[in-house]
Image (cartoon, rainbow, N blue to C red):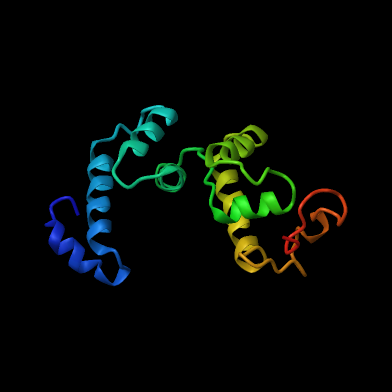
Length: 156
């Protein structure tokens, strides 16, 4: 991919939408990948990734966890939605705050982070989309009780 002309790459990925932007971002990630030191400390790798054009925190943590097998917890929309709906994190928590919440509560273990993220995605897809479908959710019993002062899904 490094040697493919950016215009050719954009044509190949055209069906994905935003192909010109994605081609530029892919080239930037590949350049980083080919030049990175795989033995560098996790915090150094993460900082480097966040400097790559088009790479934000979720993408950086995904690359670290899934491609480099480094213990960096991935936070996505499902993670925030599930934790805030269940009163486990404040509504205004940012990405790094949510990441710290998990990483301070769990041992730094690639397999564990991978499994937690997979379970969160599954619960999110099945039950905790933009409109909650709480019935049958494995976390249903952990929802805040009405009148508890904590937000209940669907209550506004």
